[in-house]
Image (cartoon, rainbow, N blue to C red; front, side):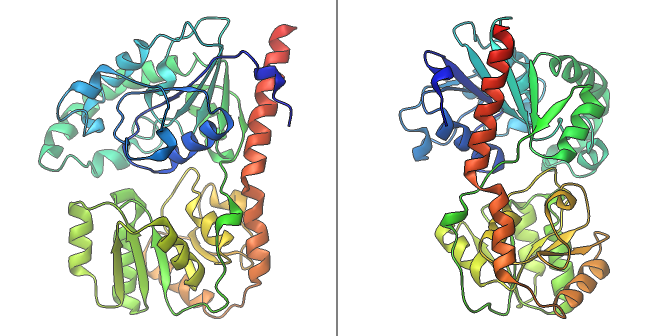
Length: 377
């Protein structure tokens, strides 16, 4: 694809924080692959070990130098909006914000093309506010958080809505997110799905007798549902996470011997688990999630909660099996249904290829080129 229109353009990529390597950071890496010369702006940065950031210019906010708040970014909730507004983008032609939170709050000049790639409108202000209130992760500070948040959230919502009017254009990671952007921000968005490199995943000719779940061990990812279900059905499951927290330790302690926990294993090992698992489990309600697509790229079917983005990307009984409620009974019935079905593994792999990296790059570049041409009149 031609990229001549980017010649002499200075580009910045902005993200909420760079702390762990989760999917917002994966999308950041995907954008850096397209725009390798881009500068990076973020509230905090703690990934010096990651080679994708080698030789990159990374500009952090003042929060980076505040002990405790720099390591627990959720405690810096009221500081992040102003921190992003202080960044100076006057020297940039194109600014791309990859965000679920406050990095869309930045201020750019009228001549700067400002695109917001939105993973979801800020969940703890809008769609999942009550859920976050009920499952705060501040541990001993939870009572303080539950007291403060209802008193702050009204103004935070107003500020977030106003900040969402600053980007020139929105891109959404799914149709579900597009609908939320319209509902909460009254902005239109085009859908560009994130990608995986489908060629990097491996195939095992023999599926083994275990299920699989991979993600960050936090409440809304529904690790508790997985543990409760498999404590009851006694089927084998491998649960992979790199989150060593209170919830992880609690759930591991109550898991029966059929539940195998894997902490901080390499991506090469994870790919092996993907390929050998009889099915991948997807119990949470997500805006968009690449992990099940990685499983499908490994020729592995998925058992998923029937909600939101999953309905955009699947064919029931061909690549996935659904369950209708986030309950032990509903999940275990779906597993029983799954075990009576047979799957065309080549079809599962082919389905994942709809999310290959070449489409993401093509769609991003075409979108930017179209908007630059429009500005030129």
